[in-house]
Length: 122
Image (tube, rainbow, N blue to C red):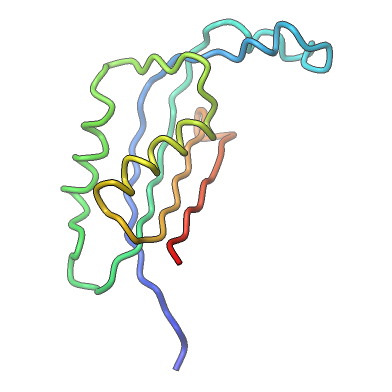
């Protein structure tokens, strides 16, 4: 028999502002120096988490509501955080509530460019 693992996922988006100060300082980033100033994106999130059975071990809507409640500001003020940093922070928070699982957190800017963080419990 094939070894299978089940996952659920939720998706949402939030408006946010961040900046990348190094873009103003590094010569190699001169062509994207505008990123050094605060700028707006619609951040898209996709959170995937392993489940041990297929009968709503984690209920989608409740999970999504909990994740969204972590981001209560109308516009996220993300300071110098990259998509990778946002994903890492979110995985840590999810691990505290749902330990011992595999997590995949995808955070993108404007649903175009982003980061995928995979954390596997072994």
